[in-house]
Length: 291
Image (cartoon, rainbow, N blue to C red):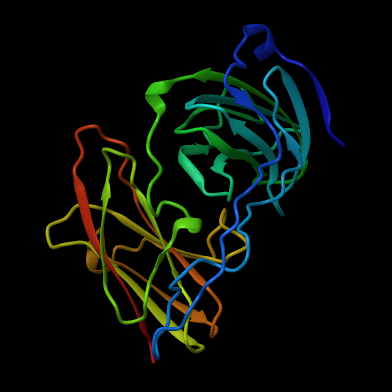
């Protein structure tokens, strides 16, 4: 059951530039090819990529109430007509430990999109302001960490051209770079532009145990995170590494059981944040058979 009513945000007139609805989602066209004994995707995925299905639309000027539990996130859809700041307030009944995540249309959190501050003045609730860097479809995920309840959510919107950032060429799973087994990828992050996450996809030529390894140059202070995702769940990683091998911040590896022809999505990210004075942070990524 979904309930709605006029909220304080509507009276403040913060609705300009934000339209809401179930995200349309864009399809990836087909064409994956094997390349020798060790194959990766040479083209686009044959199936459309989609994020979690929205339970309701989040509308500026109205409150919406959704049920939440620990099993799966409740999902609200948002479409921004321009860059700006999205304010989200959620209050639970009964009081639960609530988290809110603002994501792209596939469920990947936007930079600064994790809201889990547990404000003392808002028991059982969360509130935060998240920059949406460009026009497009977004999602708001609500999750409980300690039981079931209902959450009333309200939102506000402030247009802000200064929040505009270009899309990262491989910053999402639908733009993932092919990663061939045994072939090294040389890449870098750029904190000036918000390029802080890179996606890769492998289509193994056989089943087995695959070792994926990320490395930063000697002397680098970049702290890397390495994650594995499946094609139907881009908002929650299946495997995660941030163990700083050899006490080096940028040395991470994952050992993954993979199946022949089944795509494996890898995300490399960094703890760095947006920094107008930042610089390129290089790293390498490789995948090799563990046997």
